Image 1: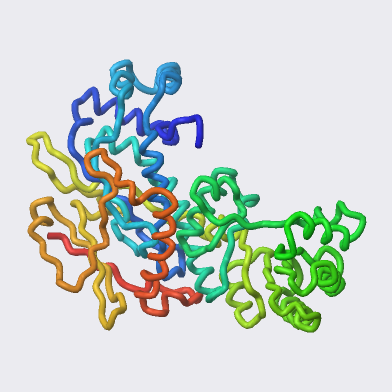
Image 2: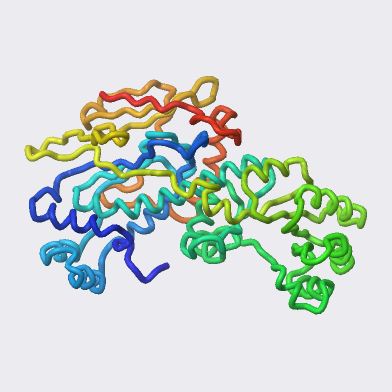
Length: 440
């Protein structure tokens, strides 16, 4: 997809740390790193994991070619010895975590990376940049899908963000419950449904609205969707049905009081015999606007700006922290930060969710040494939340590609249905279930 290495999509200090650790001998110490967030965006009840598949895709190409190595050498980022170490770099560690589409909460161990310090530290920035953004978009998308009820939502946010973020957002939106995207590259790369017909400029370039509609129908057929708010909506709907007949596929409204206009247009279409013509609305929609449109006769939504910006929360504040490392004696030792307001829980983690009456009641995070965790027995009705993505450098392909995205799309709906119904409330509140951390 790109002609640059994911291994340079990182912060310089990842490489300077590697350089120093190779010189002092600690680079080869076995380590466990963990991705988690200390809090959800203010007022949010849950988050949705997305982006893991993109991380695995990037991991396949996470190496440096001659030009990359020359860049590091010319900038004196690392020493000659480190450059030699990097020449044949391949991640040989293991990665496990929450699957895409899974719900997460404060202190959920969303991803755990195990390997040597040298190889694990190089992955930090890439992992965080992907998970933070993709999960923010998927979380916003999930709220929007809930607000839209059974009406499909489509991604139209490409022009409101960076060109590569647009591709990532389209993928994350589908994980979050959206049905398709206007972004053709995302549709090509991930096998997503592509949607779109015409903009206002298409109408304006023609001598009349009728000519524009005739042109679009001649090119795309009667089942197309015509944009009807360039001039006068009532006149446009009348013209649209005259040109296409009652078989007209759909109309789109992109301005004004969307609920009121949708009602008027629905009544007008029905009066004209176009009872099966659908209505799509767009125009700066967010989950609150979608909720307000629940009683309006709208068939689908196109969402842009608020989707690709996480609906006001463009990041999940996820962090990547060392939780266990090999000591000089070869023994794995839990470690933790004690910084004010940034303290961490030592040790690698297990994660489970408990249920009562088929509804989630708590997230259980169990922390401890490898031996203690191996001896831990969860309660029989607890759901294990961790899956294996990479085993000693070998990526499990079931978590990549189109099928993985669609599986995540379906899984999100199932996981959300298992949460208390207050999870779907748009009112601000605390996380819908508590996270209980136990240190063995």
